[in-house]
Amino acid sequence: MSNRVVCREASHAGSWYTASGSQLNAQLEGWLSQVPSTVRPARAIIAPHAGYTYCGSCAAYAYKQVDPSVTRRVFILGPSHHVPLSRCALSPAEIYRTPIYDLKIDQKVYADLWKTGMFERMSIQTDEDEHSIEMHLPYTAKAMESHKDEFSIVPVLVGALSESKEQEYGKLFSKYLADPANLFVISSDFCHWGQRFRYTYYDESQGEIYRSIEHLDKMGMGIIEQLDPISFSNYLKKYHNTICGRHPIGVLLNAVAELKKTGVDMNFSFLNYAQSSQCRNWQDSSVSYAAGALTVH
Image 1 (cartoon, helix red, strand yellow):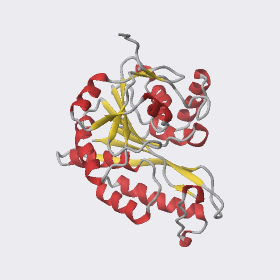
Image 2: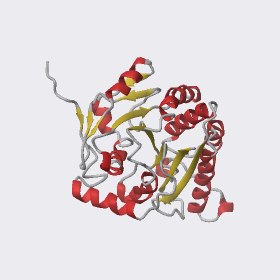
Image 3: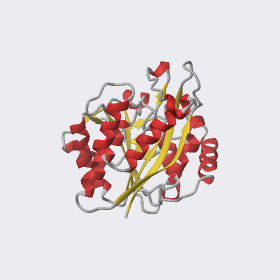
């Protein structure tokens, strides 16, 4: 029997972001230094998972709200882009590599989650193919670097959940969200617009196409800020906005709703919004990014 530690390699380093630790460190530092920390300490953040050249500066607005002195566990909930999954899945790895430093998975929390019977195990191949969790690892490492030996991560791959499943997982994660030592990172981009995404909703009253996209995204962001999972579901049913992390967001909103029942007062605010490019005609395409933070009073 080998006691080899199972590691997930930083498979998107060198393509979606630089594989050089020192360069990556300098980039993240640059983006973070330009952003105010207005709503610290965040208990949860929503941030994008595109290549850093597209969304690194936007994501900084969320990560700047993380307080490394209180955070001991970082739950990262990312959508599944490549494998069909109707539930949530946990990683077979123990260590997640990043070019900055390696992150360790919290095996105790993983054991508790396994016991619920609600989780599947993804293969290391599935884990390394998926970018939605990995794109948050360098930022997590950077935000937490002053306490790098004092925290662990809990990566969760979120499938195409039904509303009732979002509620069940929300209930399960609510007890972790209640603990100030935990931070939830919700991985999501916003509207994917254009023929290549098979989504071309356009409200002409808003003017240019990119303005219509912004209006649609900001409507959704406003609903997320209300922290109401049912309104968010209704918005998605009505407009079908291509928010790829809608299920992780749904799980967060349900966890918040569960905590609110116990009288916990929470507030969510978006701090930045960006688009990869400005769409002006039907041949164009763009992806939108938003960064925000949840605080508990």
